[in-house]
Image (tube, rainbow, N blue to C red; front, side, top):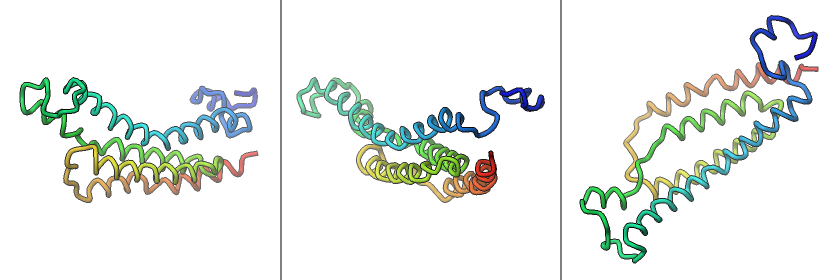
Length: 173
């Protein structure tokens, strides 16, 4: 905060930057872009863990024999749980989509690299979700259009935020 910062602003905002400045772009903007880049490759790490951890558990169960019938499990439910795959959790995916949309729309005008990063992120999520549903999880739950409508309702005001905050970023001296 500078000496010219209004008192009411210093009372509510406790950060180092109260406006978009060159230092904000170097410090905060760089972290936002770096986080979006990490989020864009995270689905591949999730795929690797989704294949690797169950494979290791199955190998440990069969004592590395490669025979799925050689097992330490004493009940059929335990055996099915080990070999059938994980449950499909869609709420994490929806939260990720909402996060990408809102962060991109909020800071996209000042950090235009976020738009191609968001596109790259959505592409990676699409590829990884196709692989996940086809090869890693049990039968996904039957869903209606309520989830999609809820997701759209959460994201429909993001373009308004793009215009308002974008105007603030572009008009800032």
